[in-house]
Amino acid sequence: MNAAALIFSAVSKTFRSEGRQVQALEEVSFAIQPGRVTGLIGPDGAGKTTLMRLAAGLLLPDTGAISVLGLDSRARPLAVQSCIGYMPQRFGLYEDLSVQENLDLYADLQGVAMTERSARYAQLMRMTGLDPFTRRLAGRLSGGMKQKLGLACALLRAPQLLLLDEPTVGVDPVSRRELWQIVYRQVQETGMSVLLSTAYLDEAERCDEVILLHQGKLLGQGEPAQFSRSVAGRIFQVSAKGLSHRRLQAQLSRAPGVLDALSEGETVRLVMTAPVAPTAEALLPGQADVDIAPVAPRFEDAFVARLKKHRSEGETRLSIALKNKTGDGDVVIRVDKLQRRFGDFIAVNNVSFSVRRGEIFGLLGANGAGKSTTFRMLRSVTCQRRRTGCSRS
Ligand SMILES: Nc1ncnc2c1ncn2[C@@H]1O[C@H](COP(=O)(O)OP(=O)(O)OP(=O)(O)O)[C@@H](O)[C@H]1O
Ligand SMILES: [Mg+2]
Image (cartoon, rainbow, N blue to C red; front, side):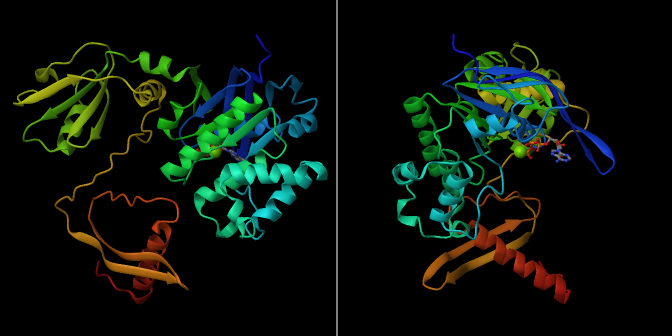
């Protein structure tokens, strides 16, 4: 077997923040094999960025050792930095520079030879679909295009190890798919190894292998299907006639043997603590017309099961149920035929919707669809109201 691309051996990292010690990573050990895409999965604050920056040679561990492509990161941080590609979570691009100027700057920083640049630029721009936009300012690109440019900058030197910190945040589903295709094509063509962090659980299933991180601790490593198999026989879908899915979810989450209850449309998806089919009487005593059906496990079920086993009291729930029907509350936001032009360009065109009190309203759309512009207009109305002391909703 080839040598591992990245090895963490009992790595711990602590930060001092406002007089407190924050343990970002605690005794983390793992190895990732070359030529594979490994997903680093964990909720906010799990330690993903810290782990990435340690792997990139930008931070040193307090204790433990890190080997990057056979190099010891403590002894040779500069050598590590020069053989990896790293796309940080934020602030990766210079927004006041054009796409071309960003490429030039990163090529300078990474010491890419002048003779190789134009062929590499052309290849990366074609691959990311950015070739028509090389003169546009990076700050004027849509979210998905920015991420693709960030990826192109990280790939300039065709690194052996590519570290991508949440590259798909804020990227629409089509662009997300394109980004994944670019990454996999590179892996196939060059044998590159990739460590990619994400908080999107559906993306875990696209990785060859995943590493689960939570509160600085490693909760497991393996192929996604392996994780899903670990909760086989423990997942059920429940519906009950005459009970709203909100009440159903609330009651089921308190029922014995239930580890997690997540609203999915009109039904609730259960993760049980053990592979035993629950009875209607045990779950919802006295309730008629209860339907309980076993369903195939997903990676997300296994993730939630592991997290809940480890989570501390009072931690925020991971599951966010997106409600797409209006509740009984009063309307607090009404948007009527909203339009916004920037010169000739219409960013928001004839948008109408209303949001009721207590409702979680999802505003979905591709990159550049006008979501942020709509939000900014809502915010400016709220600010004006606050200034003028208007209390009407
Ligand atoms: N430079 C720093 N100074 C102080 N605390 C830090 C620093 N960097 C990270 N931390 C803390 O370390 C913990 C892990 O943070 P980290 O950014 O690695 O998490 P993450 O998994 O990348 O989160 P996110 O999904 O929000 O990006 C957090 O509690 C964070 O506040
Ligand atoms: Mg992060």
